[in-house]
Image (cartoon, rainbow, N blue to C red; front, side):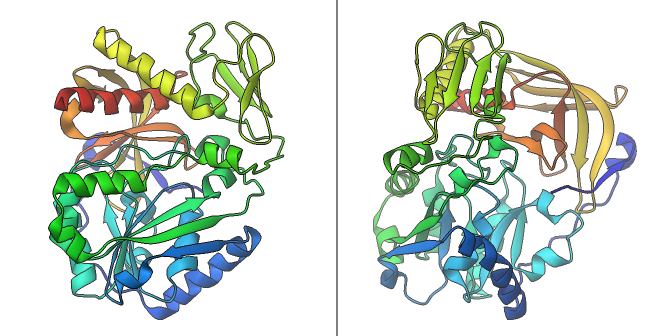
Length: 418
């Protein structure tokens, strides 16, 4: 899957007109039926099944649907669950590129990842109250990196109280194992299922505090896809199952080296000390040389996060990398504006480039998380920062792990708030 790109000078891109706001549309039945039909082959191939709980409490009224975000399969799963009911889906602006005419017709509501967007709240409410549609959103915003939830926005309960609508959760099992982000879009043979539950009724939302609502949503998103695979003995025999795993596990726990890991085939090796791990058919690691310190991949991820926390506490964290810069200011293209330099420290991000014309600063408190992706639209690993005026997509030219940058951004926000 690719995105349309266009080379333009920075000074020209910054003057381009921004898209006009449009109210959400109720998706036409023909478009809903088409998407459902296109979803059928994947749903059949994965033997998709649904388990429903307490859905009678939601009634027939429009609901807010909160779904975990695992892979490109998610949209097909949603249509497998809710068709023929009309869905308005919160979608990122990059998905609108070259499809600006189509996305509103299928009910999409545009937003920017990890950028404050009060218009989005109004659009979601409009879709439910004026258009009679369910609204589907992925509160994590980005795909899960390690099969667990990403950091959820604070005070989500405020939004739930404002909407006064039933809240339905969708938790998928197998979608991550079938197509994990680090594995380079290589599909595995895995059955997929979903748990669909009416989490909260309007009456329950009314009687609970914002903190209580946030806690309930957090608990609903407490999942571990690698643990699910291990405990249910879900066998993944593909010989490429460890490809790209170094994008997630970037630091060796044996020698501490960063950027020397390589995941290839079924093995993960550190080129600094030579320690090698093998990923078995149930998603667990075991060392072929030396001690197996982390058999469960999320445990390794947690260890890396704590190493970043230590660096921040000791004021030792810093990212410096030359980047190619893409900008998104409308829905026509990703504009490649030239080269630059990206810095990240306790003071936040600093992006400079385009022969001195571009300078953008972003504080640690600007967002609770960071938009990063692996092999984004087949261009490369990316760190995206920006605001309502423009998004800057930074493609590192060095061997930089974007996963570490996300950990650092999330921890900086957390520490700054504390």
